[in-house]
Image 1 (cartoon, rainbow, N blue to C red):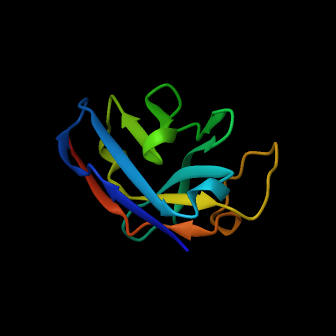
Image 2 (image 1 turned 60 degrees about the vertical axis):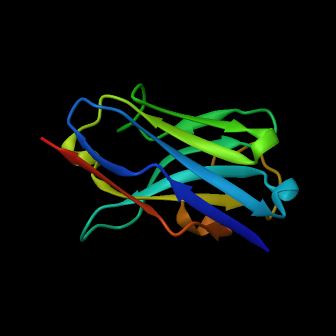
Image 3 (image 1 turned 180 degrees about the vertical axis):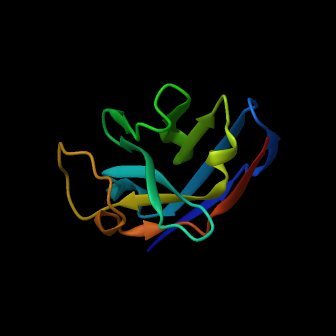
Length: 127
């Protein structure tokens, strides 16, 4: 079993920064991909960023490219999302996710491609 626990959400003014953390426990040795999604009120959960656990290759949604950075600390089994130049439209609940079902060179942007999810952390950007 895998547990993912997010932290670091909060309130920030537009143009500010936040760093989200996701601590993984359990079968972390079997992670192939870890990612972040977000869900705003009344909207579907959408892809933000993903990373290959081995190798560290990354992929971003166009809406956050150049502003957000996903990274990892293998020793701590933790993945981060550094969010800079935040906008009001970034307001959402942010979810950490992990894929364990198999290795692939593809980057996965669909919620159905991932196997485990955290409980989410609220990010509110005030304009």
